[in-house]
Image (cartoon, rainbow over all chains, first blue to last red):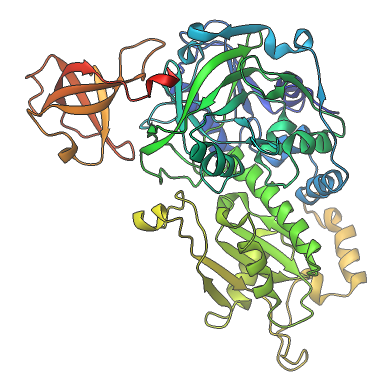
Length: 479
Length: 84
């Protein structure tokens, strides 16, 4: 099952018991944000809010992908699929050949049902929510992506870069120089004094959003097709030379200005803090707004776990690292990032066949383009279940030597790390740490390596099977 | 009831009785609430001195408990004309 738009996905959420429809009026000024925040913290179904104060005809969908159940649904899988099953399906689809998008006519594109160009294109005509009390402004764009194009080679990028409504025609936001969109803006358009065309896509189909959050080297237009297993349908923009998903709810077109910056933030961020201070940031100037009838603005509410940023970034970052390490020939068994770590902790399982392999793993991932987004790597042996938090904590606390097993490196970070000083944040400094939770290979396996005492490790297979087969007969609840 | 608010790093960013450029947020209820206005203005820690009440927030959104008052002198355009 492939969802061509946000609305088909909403139907699937409802059928799976993952949607709550709210018919009473909800205030865009904090109330909607508070509902979505509570949903994130309670791991509750996604709220579809059908009546928004001051904005008749507009709707909100909050927390669209805050759980692995919702992610499984988005991929057309059984919502009860396990995390390893979802990961295996993601890897299967994204290790195939890229799937080119198709361009459709404007008349067939739902996102063109309403077209507002020029002075009438007013950002305050859209229900940008005040997501958290104390935010620097109304964050219209929290579950969305920004489409841009390289002026030299035409490469298209979709990136999730937050955008705050500044005034009727202006949005502001951090376009970090090491993000894919940021590299093109800061490296090419800005030095040339040229404005960079952009199109912000709000309320995309779920797999376009997953693709936009994935740090894959494959262009998102093709990566989405790989995830969908069919081409994504695009349509040309009205005022800029870009293409956007035709079934999106809302599209904002305009230019990113090269020679001015304005205030943005603070904002509740994916780390669960307001870390990056209010500052002068990138300016987006709006030229056109197009939208579907009865448009649905999607809201992600960053804060303490679990929100979309934590869940999806953890999922896709971890699996892109899985590909990277396997491509390097390193004998890993898997990579998992715990969403609760706000994608700061990478757990890598490895069949350690040579000494110091954990250091090689850490240096490979810290040195990759993915490196700025996390700072902790924890390497465990191939017998540890990387998806089992109990096993991970046990490995960390029993196999990591406090002097020999912890290695600290200097690297590149983001201004969003809560533990950095203000000066470190300004300089993109990012200390990194490796926790090597493997026993040294030169220890004698019989006289020096401790033997793990667990159900699956110290009982014969026939005893394990007997206990498992009789589990309910003993009187325990089904496993 | 506040008319505007402003984010500052410290109260030193709000010198009294001196013309200062500020990025204010309009707090009037309705669809345009939180729209930014760039202005030159006079501010005072005496909340009765000027017509409009000003709420102060610090860099991470924390509210300063003591309100100021503000007199807006002129609008200021910070975006270069060629982009308007």
